[in-house]
Length: 463
Image 1 (tube, rainbow, N blue to C red):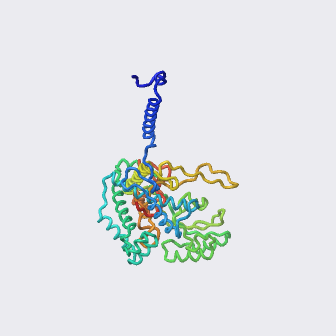
Image 2: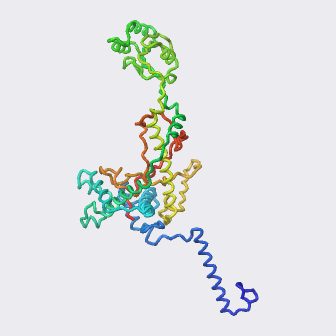
Image 3: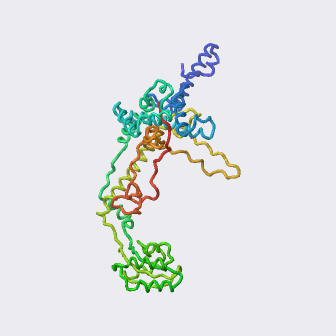
């Protein structure tokens, strides 16, 4: 018999056989739907009734209702609230996001560690807990902060469990140890060649130039006669004379109206040609060092000047600049690689994370940021309101601080480590202030480097 029933043959079947045919066809249709669902993602695991989220492919990757409620309480405590806010209140979204962020990041890190074959030992955990306790003045202070932050359950408190042995505290020690392992796994030391250094140097040559600078003592007054009196008092004095500085201090105090220099003996240091008053610059950078010049008139009044120091323009050599250039190139490339690692990490685990609608946030697959509510009398924004960064939390941004504050200490979940960022205030060794930031290829960067700075302050996770 053919695979399909001809219409005439179907018409001649008994009612019983027709029902059998209908059942077979329905079964075939159901199988087709299941196969289609599996190919388009409808066959992904669902969230159990006693949970709010699940991370596919991770042992113990379920965020239970109890986990979630505990996280809400800890988030509320961190924010100084007596209890978690009501669902739908303005505060709930922030508390929910921080709670889910911490809970999910903890699971993500466990999954990433498993994928990479990384294991945390009891010794690793204990080492982290010891370091945490060392940050407090004494055990009493540590216990107080732990309990205020609700890291110990009521049952643990009633059972007189030592704070360092409370389950959430131990879990934080494990997450810190896990963070260290992931940090080592994600870290890199990019290679910088001599050619890279030379290309950077040539592309940023102006940044390695120190401009011509001069220091001068000045008298400024709207009254030309006052400046002429100062000239008479200072005539014949050389910067090498013993009483030179005292004479200028007296003259500036008595005759000068220049507020920037009169209290410093008329001294203006580090004048850069082309960056100041053009009329004053013209005289300062054309004068002979150690000779009185003036009075001459400007838009500000009459000046008397004497150049006391001069530093010619200088360009730092490639050899001198090499250490600083290498440091900056390594930092730039580490930042680029770290950004890629963070993006891959977040993308990988977000795809595997399913949340119930009540707790959805940016770490949940399929999350759509809510539309901003219109403000009466104001035009609607052109773009949706920005959502929190999906980058993992920076190391050390926990609720429980080593010093008892709420800034650093126990982490809120595993973090993808960020590369060290040079302190711009301190400058780089061998690299002059004002050097152009660069991209990983050594060319000047066209904008600020990407920031992996994520939202901080998520509550501790208890997966």
